[in-house]
Image 1 (cartoon, rainbow, N blue to C red):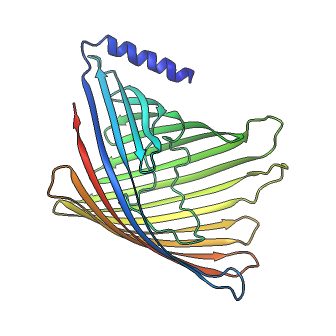
Image 2 (spheres, rainbow, N blue to C red):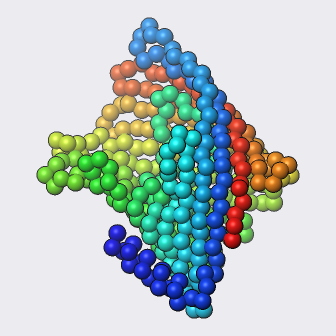
Image 3 (tube, rainbow, N blue to C red):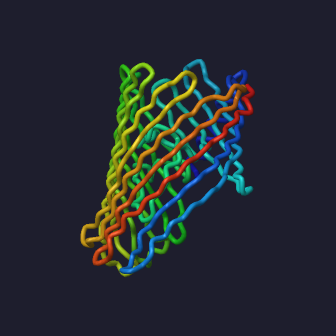
Length: 346
């Protein structure tokens, strides 16, 4: 917090030394999602019955954002961004919220920024979750936005960017810390990103036992050629530590892979993608795996500011408990998203 106050003071001083605020923007949008999902889960005991569920749901949110930037003759600038949202249940939330200082070759953000993504899936799309499926790992535990922290980015050239994300948070009786260094390279339609994702939880009470750590790696490669974009992502993490009695936890390894393609079709975009995730343990014979796929299409409506997106997805999971009955579960889902931009004011 002390570092944040110092950065805030510097940013205010820079703004006061300028004749006028060079840039200021405020905008808002609303998003409504209507979902349909079915799932099938086999019995976990001999002679048991499978469970089949069908659900319909609707959700959404209103989001507002403010941005500002003041740049000096030297090229040094101060900027800020705040994103706030109200959910359909009346709950308040926030997205990016930070102060930024930098110039053409570097910048630093303090507050609640979000770093570069390391695991793209092509489209921002709802993917159905099969019962018992292992969670997809996207090398984002220390990416930021949901926690106090910051990031520093250095751009030695137009093609190269080096970024380091750091975060700190409280989680119940534990302190949470994380770091996420990454490198991004872009040239001739090709973008490649790779990084390390480290996260640790330790007790606030120095006399308490137990800690959890996650060390992961992730990367994404994307290539655009005209109207078509192809991409692939991969990430792997090992989670371990000690329990409340100071005994070693059984290390868990998660591997996630994903491939996707996007194609411009007039003013809209067609997207397809698919991936897999596996979960294994160092000692236990428990294991599970998941396969998922989706297809989506988004396009603007014939009204300024309005758009619609359709998506359908399928997922299957294989759950193999040590000494238990193997389950083959599945899920199918669809979503229709309506989106409207209220416009921005500068």
